[in-house]
Image (cartoon, rainbow, N blue to C red; front, side):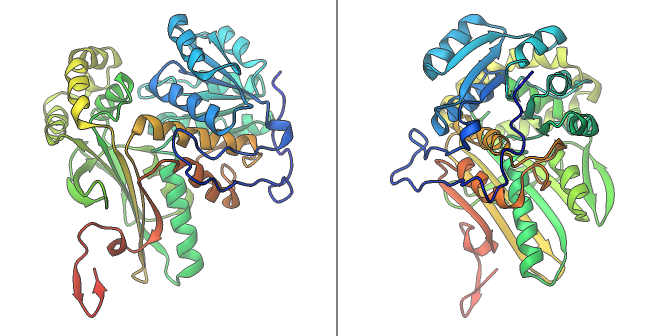
Amino acid sequence: MARALVHLTSYCDRGFRLTACAGASEEKPCPAVLPEKARGARVLVLGGTGRVGGSTATALSKLCPDLRLVIGGRNRDKGAAMVATLGRNSQFMQVNIEDASSLESALKDADLVVHAAGPFQQTNSCPVLEAAIATKTAYIDVCDDTNYAFRAKSFSNKAKSANIPAITTAGIYPGVSNVMAAELVRAAKSESKGEPERLRFYYYTAGTGGAGPTILATSFLLLGEEVVAYNKGEKIKLKPFSGGLNIDFGKGVGKRDVYLLNLPEVSTVHEVFGIPTVSARFGTAPVFWNWGMEAMARLLPPEYLRDRSKVQRLVQLFDPLVRAVDGFAGERVSMRVDLECSDGRNTIGIFTHKRLSVSVGFATASFVLAVLEGSTQPGVWFPEEPEGIAVEAREILLKRASEGTSSFVMNKPPWMVETEPKELGLGIYV
C-alpha cells in the first residue's frame, strides 16, 4: 500500500519556498524544497526509458535530488542506461502496463506514479489510473487525447473514495498551457469588468521537438480525429489540420503557420470556465511538414489514421527522414495562449524554450512536485481546476516549468511581446 502524501499540511503552513538562484539554468535549476514527509517520496515513472518519461525523471532528479525514482519500462538495457544517468536514488523496474498484476506490483510501494507511456490516442481503458486507485497511489499522466482525458475524469469519484489525488493531461501542452489559461482567466476576472469570451491556444514545435516516435504517432493519430471547437457556446466539429492562421510567437520564434487539431484543453477549459469560444492550433517546421500533415488529413481515410497498427507502420516509414530533418530543424517549442474579454481586454501568455525534450520534463516534474506538496485534492482533475492545482500553487508551478525558457511572459497585451507590433501613432499599438 502506497504511503499517503495527500494534504500533508495546508499550503500556507507548510513553509514552501522557491529559493532565488543566481545563474540558474536547465542544467542546474533551483532545487525544490518539499515538505519533510515528502522529500524521500518514491516516484514511479512509467515510460521512463522514453523521451518524455526520461526527461521527466531527469528534471525530477535535478529539482528534488532526495526523491527516489523508479524507472518503469519493458527494456532492461534502456532502463539500466537511464538509471546510470540518474544516479544513486534511482532504479529500474520492468513493468507491463497492459498487465494488471504487473502494474499493481510496481505501484504497491510507490507514493506517486507518472504515466508517460503514450500514445494515448485510440486507448479504450485507463489501466494505470485504475491500478493507482486500487493501490492508493497518487497519479498524473501526460495524456494529450480528449477521449482519454474525459475517460480518466470519469474515475474521479472512485479516486475520491480512495483519497487519491490525480491529474490528467499534466504535461507541457496540454498541462502547463492549461495553467497559463487559468491564470489569464483569473487575472481578467479580478482586473476587468468584462467576461472572458474567447480563448485560443497556439502551439509551435520545430520538427518533432526531439521527442521521438511517440509524438510522431500522436500527430498522425490526431489527423484521424474531427476537431472539436466552441463558437459562441456552440460545440462545432471541423476538419483536422484546417483553418490555418499565421501567429506571432514573439522573440526567437516569430510568425508561424498553425492549424486546427483536436486537443483536450479546448473541451476542458470550456467546461471548467464556461468560455463560449475556444480553439487550439498547432504548427511545425520546416514548412513542408505542415504541407505533408495537411495532405495526409485530406487524402487518407480517417479510419486509416485511427488504426494504431497502420499508424505505427507509417511512423516506421517516416521516422528515419524525420530524424534527419530534426538534426537541422532543432526542437524549439513555443506556446501562446490568447484571452479576449467582453470589455475589449486582450491579454496573452507566451512560453518558449529551445528544447522541447528538456522543457516537457520540467513541465511534467512541476506537476509531480505540486501533487507531492499537497496541492491536489482527492479525485481526478484537469490542470486548470483549482482542486487539481490550487490557485496559490500555480505561480510556483509555472516558475518551475519555465526553467531554461528563452521567453516566458504572462498577462500582457499582444503588442508588448509580438515581434512586429503595429503603431497607430502617439505611442498606441495594436
